[in-house]
Image (tube, rainbow, N blue to C red; front, side, top):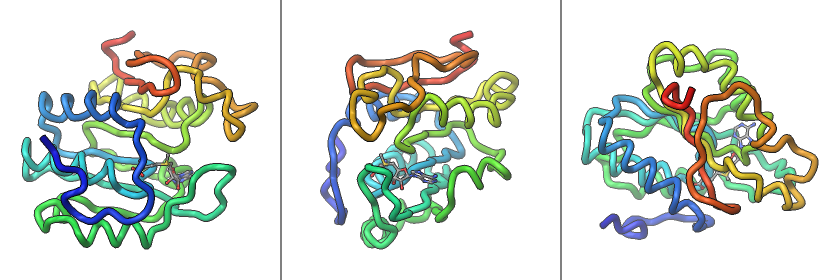
Amino acid sequence: MIQMNKWAIRGSIHTGYQESMLGIMKWIRDNSPNKIIQLGTGSGVITFLMAQYLYDTNPNGKIKAYDWWDDSSDGFHIFSMDDFEFSYRNQPKELQNIIEYEKLDYRKWLDNPDTDWDMIYLDLNNDGEKIEKIYDVLKDKVLDEGKVIFFEGGTDGRFNKEAYKGRKKFSEMKDIPYKVYSVGIKSFGVISREFI
Ligand SMILES: C[S@@+](CC[C@H](N)C(=O)[O-])C[C@H]1O[C@@H](n2cnc3c(N)ncnc32)[C@H](O)[C@@H]1O
């Protein structure tokens, strides 16, 4: 059993990731990936958890974690890079060695995306438009190479919240092979050619 609070995590610790983490951790165990990309690192709590699982499965694996750590919140919670780095420095060395991170707007990342990944985890205050835009750039990796994209959300529960009002719903996305796990507001989606 992972002790999430064993090492210092500063900033906001939030719940609601149970469903996606169970799916992602199982996927890491089953697939022993070499490289995971995370877009939307925030506090890093999920990064550190994935790093622990990856280390246990493939100690040579890497996680590249991106966030813009920007203070224009758009109604969303703000995560600071300082808080992330404080927590990062307090991780065991072997986990620090697995994680690389970079402050970057994901839209810039899309102009020149990493190409050597096995799985991407998207947690960018997701909505249908963001997922479509990202999938459009990455779809060859999914369709031709069998790579997988996990994303927070998938059901439309979040669109009742103020910050998501007027945004494109997940159910309005077109031509993306994905499946949603869990129900209600807490859900996660998996994009894979298995679901064509
Ligand atoms: C729901 S939070 C992620 C929480 C994170 N998984 C954790 O464990 O704390 C969404 C994140 O997306 C980031 N984000 C939003 N828009 C972004 C953009 N355009 N480029 C990069 N990161 C962005 C925010 O800074 C925020 O940290």
